[in-house]
Length: 140
Ligand SMILES: [Ca+2]
Image (cartoon, rainbow, N blue to C red; front, side):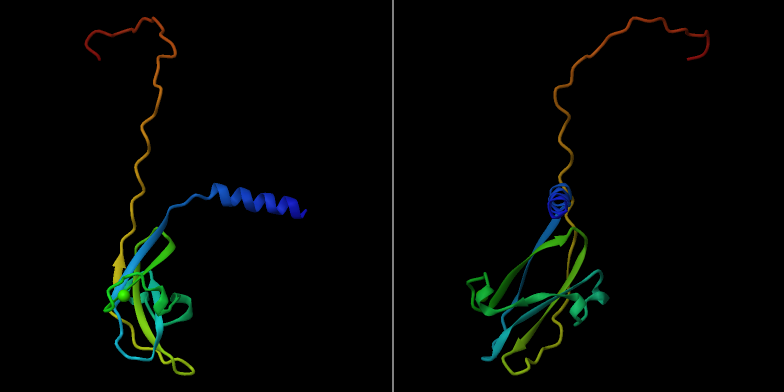
């Protein structure tokens, strides 16, 4: 039974090849000395981006900054559904419990169209049939 379940999980994992979206966000790094990190929020519209656990993508700490410029912070959110998505970030400090800022400005990442289908390959003539076509005078 466990093996069957595992097989089903593997089958689902290999057949569900939906497109995912990775979005790289960048913002001005906070200059306070006690910044613990940033929280990323997302929504399905600008109004849907709220400071709520259900909208929280995750927290990033200073070590995760991928922009070498000290005044900018960059982070890539991966594996999102390929739909228009709105984002905002907050900063939190090192207090216990952490204090969180208000939301940044909100930005929208538009969905990305998947590549078009590949052209069909190996077109060939499979059969030719010789037949009469009845054409009525004055029609067709
Ligand atoms: Ca940086």
